[in-house]
Length: 285
Length: 303
Image (cartoon, rainbow over all chains, first blue to last red; front, side, top):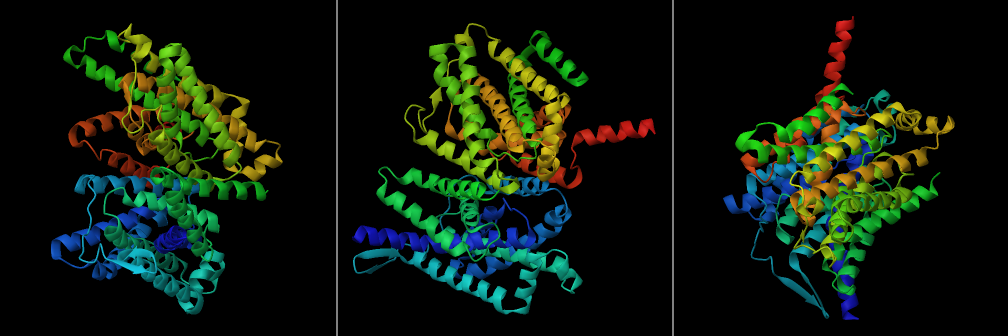
């Protein structure tokens, strides 16, 4: 019973960070209409920002969160201006290839700069755990979960209650009409893509503590985020949280209950993508 | 067509040229370039139907492993065919499930497929897992140039397939599918079947190239054979050279593999950065690839 409860808790806690990464990707896909294969690399940059600040200046990752968000917002904005905007009208194949190329380039630039080693930001509270009635969990995952929930709440509030959020949703629904109504479509795209990268960057800072910073750390999250937004329906932000919970729980159960589970967890996201896509492709005409 | 012929001739006589101490290195690099160009031509076939496949690295790896495992029992040529067949069969299954999907959905599914194939090969026992798999050289090592000429043959087969498919009636079906699936369907093109057939042919060729690659390197590991690097090479080369053409991937393959080999010697790990950068720059500034430069110049001369 305790094992089941523990598995459930592990799954739910992991879902927070998944939802955070996937929400960013959903923003890029839903608002800008770009399938960003480099999304996980934004997380990777966030993880390295946290690592460098920690090692170089002794800055705690909690403080790096804000800095990484700003840095990644800028990276996202530059990416949008330099790379995404020129191909907005190009065929979808070109857009996907462009972001895929960016992903490969960023991964390998990081590899050239830092090598393939994994680097952990080892804070004093890294190994701390909380025990509640037979189940225990680490402080960093719990904090990451709470922070993710808070950020997602803020994101939903922004999109649902503010004028700017309305504008973002309007642009997501229709590319032409908001422009005619006086909404600066280009600026909304810029904002959405920057936010998307910032969310990924914040998740990256969390990863640097919970997992590690390495050139390839983001790529797995690109795939997981894709699994989630495919399940939710591409660009459907509201479905992201339940989809993230499903994926994280599935992973937690596989790693606990499947014998020799560890490596098979890597295959779970594939199964999720596959089932979701196949179901979609046979249901739609 | 011209270039393909010249290239084939050069490839055939290359081992006979007086290269001195550079001979072994040149032949090894050329063999690698032929195989990767073959893979690129195979990828381009599927791209002609408008599908972005990130699974060609996996087909290459599947072909490599299948050929390596069956070669001791069956001999070199049947083993290579088995390699192609295994890749083709897996693409058929993947395609049946996903080729109704369009654009990004298909690309994501193929990316997930290649990641999972690597996990499976890592986890399985008979593949040697993460330790790797030693492979026998082609023809049991009886002919020193056997592997080299197999690579030439694979490139010739891929080139022939690419040329034939761009001159056939099937070519129109592929182009129509790419340019507008709904319209193609209205015109009576069975788009799912066209994509599935192209996907299978394309994967077969990729698997064939993978088998020869296994017999060239003599050692396979999941990280090498199923790495994302192969999938990246497979798609950057045609895009750089010129999509939907035969000459483009051939030309691109020669240039990019040369660049890659040079960089690999100089900086080692991270050499894939050139692929990322070339891909981004090509999409931004030369979306039709190198071939568009020639086409433009030719057009200007006629005018």
